Image (cartoon, rainbow, N blue to C red):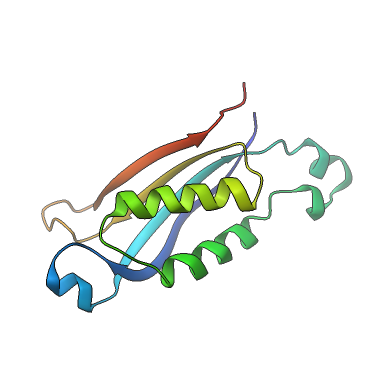
Amino acid sequence: MDQVFIRGLEVETVIGVYDWERTIRQRLLFDLDMAWDIRAAAADDDLNQALDYAAVSQRLLDYVSSTDFELIETLAERVAALVLDEFNVPWVRLTVTKPGAVKEAGGGVGVIIERGQRPA
Protein backbone atom coordinates (compact mmCIF):
# COMPACT_ATOMS: atom_id res chain seq x y z
CA MET A 1 0.00 0.00 0.00
CA ASP A 2 1.15 3.48 -0.76
CA GLN A 3 1.71 5.99 2.00
CA VAL A 4 1.35 9.74 2.30
CA PHE A 5 3.49 11.30 4.99
CA ILE A 6 3.87 14.51 6.96
CA ARG A 7 7.13 15.17 8.82
CA GLY A 8 7.94 17.67 11.54
CA LEU A 9 4.55 19.37 11.83
CA GLU A 10 5.05 21.85 14.69
CA VAL A 11 2.21 22.80 17.00
CA GLU A 12 2.15 24.70 20.28
CA THR A 13 -0.31 23.53 22.92
CA VAL A 14 -0.82 23.07 26.64
CA ILE A 15 0.56 19.63 27.47
CA GLY A 16 2.02 18.10 30.61
CA VAL A 17 1.29 16.93 34.12
CA TYR A 18 3.31 19.41 36.16
CA ASP A 19 1.75 22.62 37.48
CA TRP A 20 4.21 24.81 35.59
CA GLU A 21 3.36 22.98 32.33
CA ARG A 22 -0.31 23.82 32.75
CA THR A 23 0.50 27.54 32.53
CA ILE A 24 2.53 27.56 29.29
CA ARG A 25 2.30 26.42 25.70
CA GLN A 26 4.87 23.87 24.57
CA ARG A 27 6.01 22.85 21.11
CA LEU A 28 5.20 19.36 19.87
CA LEU A 29 6.33 17.74 16.63
CA PHE A 30 4.14 15.36 14.66
CA ASP A 31 5.20 12.82 12.04
CA LEU A 32 2.48 10.87 10.24
CA ASP A 33 2.53 7.97 7.80
CA MET A 34 -0.92 7.32 6.33
CA ALA A 35 -1.95 4.45 4.06
CA TRP A 36 -3.48 5.73 0.84
CA ASP A 37 -3.78 4.30 -2.64
CA ILE A 38 -2.39 7.07 -4.84
CA ARG A 39 -3.12 5.42 -8.21
CA ALA A 40 -6.46 7.18 -8.86
CA ALA A 41 -4.99 10.61 -8.12
CA ALA A 42 -1.91 9.90 -10.22
CA ALA A 43 -3.92 8.57 -13.18
CA ASP A 44 -5.85 11.82 -13.63
CA ASP A 45 -3.55 14.24 -11.80
CA ASP A 46 -6.56 14.92 -9.58
CA LEU A 47 -6.25 16.41 -6.08
CA ASN A 48 -9.81 15.27 -5.31
CA GLN A 49 -8.56 11.67 -5.47
CA ALA A 50 -5.49 12.36 -3.35
CA LEU A 51 -5.07 12.46 0.39
CA ASP A 52 -4.70 16.21 0.84
CA TYR A 53 -1.76 16.49 3.23
CA ALA A 54 -2.27 20.26 3.46
CA ALA A 55 -5.83 19.70 4.73
CA VAL A 56 -4.66 17.02 7.17
CA SER A 57 -1.90 19.33 8.43
CA GLN A 58 -4.25 22.27 8.91
CA ARG A 59 -6.81 20.15 10.73
CA LEU A 60 -4.14 18.88 13.11
CA LEU A 61 -2.79 22.39 13.68
CA ASP A 62 -6.28 23.64 14.52
CA TYR A 63 -7.14 20.68 16.74
CA VAL A 64 -3.90 20.30 18.69
CA SER A 65 -3.44 24.04 19.31
CA SER A 66 -6.88 24.13 20.94
CA THR A 67 -6.41 21.08 23.20
CA ASP A 68 -5.32 20.81 26.81
CA PHE A 69 -4.14 17.30 27.71
CA GLU A 70 -1.81 16.10 30.42
CA LEU A 71 -0.39 13.11 28.53
CA ILE A 72 0.98 12.94 25.01
CA GLU A 73 -0.43 9.41 24.96
CA THR A 74 -3.95 10.83 25.18
CA LEU A 75 -3.23 13.43 22.54
CA ALA A 76 -1.75 10.81 20.21
CA GLU A 77 -4.85 8.60 20.53
CA ARG A 78 -7.17 11.51 19.77
CA VAL A 79 -5.12 12.70 16.78
CA ALA A 80 -4.94 9.19 15.31
CA ALA A 81 -8.72 8.79 15.68
CA LEU A 82 -9.28 12.16 14.03
CA VAL A 83 -7.15 11.23 11.01
CA LEU A 84 -8.80 7.83 10.62
CA ASP A 85 -12.34 9.19 10.98
CA GLU A 86 -12.24 12.53 9.21
CA PHE A 87 -9.96 11.62 6.30
CA ASN A 88 -11.04 7.99 5.76
CA VAL A 89 -7.47 6.79 6.13
CA PRO A 90 -7.37 3.03 6.77
CA TRP A 91 -4.11 3.10 8.77
CA VAL A 92 -1.91 5.71 10.41
CA ARG A 93 1.43 5.62 12.20
CA LEU A 94 1.83 8.71 14.36
CA THR A 95 4.91 9.96 16.17
CA VAL A 96 4.48 12.73 18.73
CA THR A 97 7.72 14.26 19.97
CA LYS A 98 8.01 16.59 22.95
CA PRO A 99 11.34 18.41 22.52
CA GLY A 100 13.01 19.54 25.71
CA ALA A 101 10.96 17.34 28.04
CA VAL A 102 14.18 15.58 29.06
CA LYS A 103 17.04 17.99 28.52
CA GLU A 104 19.59 15.22 27.99
CA ALA A 105 17.45 13.74 25.18
CA GLY A 106 18.54 16.06 22.39
CA GLY A 107 16.08 14.57 19.92
CA GLY A 108 13.14 14.80 22.30
CA VAL A 109 10.92 12.15 23.85
CA GLY A 110 7.50 10.93 22.85
CA VAL A 111 5.30 8.14 21.59
CA ILE A 112 4.75 6.23 18.37
CA ILE A 113 1.39 4.58 17.76
CA GLU A 114 -0.20 2.72 14.86
CA ARG A 115 -3.97 2.58 14.49
CA GLY A 116 -6.33 1.16 11.91
CA GLN A 117 -5.77 -1.73 9.53
CA ARG A 118 -2.55 -1.60 7.59
CA PRO A 119 -3.40 -2.73 4.05
CA ALA A 120 -1.21 -5.38 2.46
